[in-house]
Image 1 (spheres, one colour):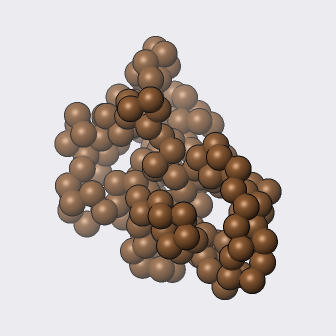
Image 2 (image 1 turned 180 degrees about the vertical axis):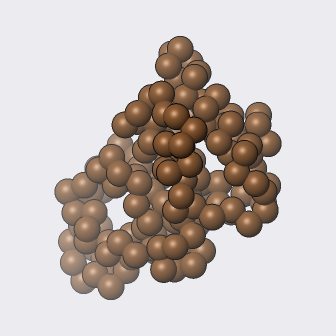
Length: 158
C-alpha cells in the first residue's frame, strides 16, 4: 500500500492505495465516482477520460500514484450548486447523448479543450475528441454541443 495525496474535484484527498490500481479504478472503487467509465481498459475508447492537471487523460491506463500532488477533475465535479455545466446541458439540448456510456469521457475531453481554447474551430473540436469513441450516435451532435457550450461560456453563461 502507498499513501496518495491528491485533489479530486477541488477537494484534497489522502488515501491508502494499492499502487497497482489505475486512476480509473481508484476513482470508481475507492472514491465512488462512478461517472468515470471503464470501457476498453487500454486507453483507446476514451470512456474513462478525466482531467489531470489540466490535460485530458485516459485514466484506465494511468497508474493511481501519477495523481500524487495533482488535481483531478471528473464528470461529478462539473455541476455547481445544483446546476449542470454548459457542456452537460448542451449535450442534452443537442441530442448528443444516446446510451450515455461515452458521454462523461466526451464531456471531460471537451472541457479540457475549452479550458485551453475557449473558441475552438470544428477541426480542433474533432481533434480533441479523436480519442473518444461513441458507438451509438454520430459525432455531429456532439460537435454541435461543444460549439454551443463554448459560445455560452464565452458569453459568461455557466
